[in-house]
Image 1 (tube, rainbow, N blue to C red):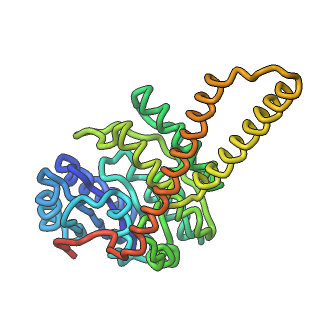
Image 2: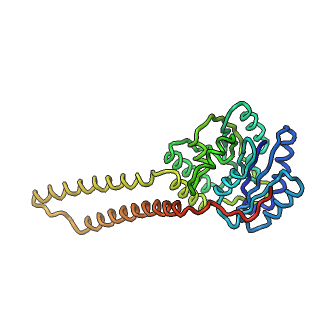
Image 3: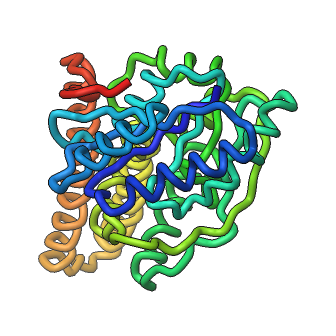
Length: 303
């Protein structure tokens, strides 16, 4: 059986359409399935629509969070509740083409453990949003050492991969990177991002930046290494200025000091504050981890 996890945040207009589209395609392909909609603390009628879809088709299941915990938590909640031998994760706005699920399942039947959805393009976006997205994926690719430029959350995982991800105890998770990190035999399916038929995207440029910072911090220590780089940079500049000051002293020429000292103090002070901020951010992440709170709280569950 195929389990399809669909995180949903304020997606009341898409629940019924997504359920019908997926059921029609998977039934036509002869693939037994369950659909796991995860209501991530929506403020609209998303949960009511999930309940209606469940009444109409018992293969539609639902998880309702007590509040908004974020997309990463929603995906892992679906993975933990999924009962299928393989599990797919996709957006419920149908921008991930549902017919590609059939191709993914066929590749899984050939023995592939992870079938990755690769975007041919990002669809229609504003220039600012596209620029921010490209910068984020470039940064996260360098930070994690994995090429994630065209990657997405749209993928299919074998049961042993799902069990491996579910066994990870960390609270702050990055699904897209972790599914790379675990390895296993992989295949790719390419797709074009579709336009929404209803509703609007919940991702703004600001939320993408926050998403980038959170996931880089949860999966990579590269920013901490940047602190060391800035320390060596400051040391190099200090050595240069020291040599200049010493040469001028020996030559009997006074160094034009006040402006230089102010600039150096501002520069070094800024680096120190940035470094403390980066270190403080990682300490905060450690603090969140050691508290051991659950990734999410489930208020209702429809099985």
